[in-house]
Structures are given as C-alpha cells and as structure tokens.
Length: 243
Ligand code: CA
Image (cartoon, rainbow, N blue to C red; front, side):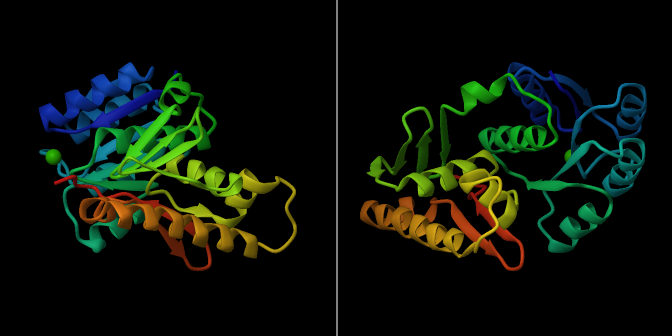
C-alpha cells in the first residue's frame, strides 16, 4: 500500500479521486488547501502527490516548490485546468514530475498513478486487476488475452508490436526513453542498434491507424497517438476529452 496525497479544493473532484484511488488499495489523504497539504506532507510523507494548481489560499506553484523541498523523492503530478504551455513548464520547474490537464478521465489518472508508483518501486494491489484490460478512446487492450481492438475491430499485431503497445498502455502520457523501451520489450542487455524499435513503432502505428480508418470518424479521432520525442523516445498521448 502506498501513501498518496491529493491537494484539490474542488469537493467533487477531490472526493472522486480519493475514493477511486482508495479502492485501488492506496492510503489516500485529501487536503483542500495548500497550507494543510504542506502540514500533512511534513507529518506523513506521501510517495505520490496529486496537486491542483488553482488553490484558494496559496499559489499552486509555491505549494509545489514547498512540497518538493519536503519530499525530495516523492512523485508530484500537477493537475491543471490552465492549458498554457508556460504553466506546464513552470510546474515542471517548480519540482513537478508530471502533469495532467483537466478534464482527464479517471482511467487515465489511475494508469498514470500506477505507472509512476511502479517506476518508483512501490507495488500496487491494483496492478493485476487493471492490467487485464485498458481502454483509451477507440483503443482497447485485453492484456490477459493479448488482444487489441480499435473501435471493436480486432487488430493483429506481431509479438513485439503487442509488447510495445502494452508498455505504452501502462503509462499513457508519460515519456519513455528508447533505452527503457528496448530493455522492457527486447532484452535487458541490448547493446545493438535501436533501429528495430523505430521499425516496430512505425508498423504498430500503421496497423492501429488502418483499423481506425476502417471504422471511420470518431475511431480515428480518439485513437491514442504514439508521439516521437526526438533524442529521447516515445510517448503515447490519449485524447483528454471524450466529447
Ligand atoms: Ca482548484
């Protein structure tokens, strides 16, 4: 069980996040002001913080900086309704590890929390259950069956393409380095060319897109996109709004 701190003044969002993350087996503390959050973090350090930037008593970025100072190793994920790129950059500069733009889906948030905790080595009781099926827009991955569907159309993938997709699905919106992908999907002692990674990503993209285009319209629009990050790796972006 890992300790999570949610800092959110919106009662509906706060209690929804608290109950769903508690159900996932986490010990969740909810604070509605920056000041109480800092006090709580000092008393009982959490492993992960979900921090709303728009708080009633303090500037969210100042809260972020204080939390980072108190919790050098915790994961801080900023929740922001502000969409300006500058806010995201300021958040990351203030010590946040990641951000989620509002509105986000609960599934997306849970996947992100799971990915961060897994990376920081904290086991989660929700791993097994949530790994069985993941859905993002028109994409559904049934992990136990290794089956991939786009808008209900089954997509046949090669083993490595499937493994890559499964890796992206574990951490939607999170940048994954080439080295990490090679280690996770191929071999932990990979020293050869990573060209094979690009080839597999390209064909994975093509197969998913072809299925989405067969289904048409909405399926294409809501298909997660595997974005190339030059000089780093890849990131799977999911559309944040279903409407
Ligand atoms: Ca707020």
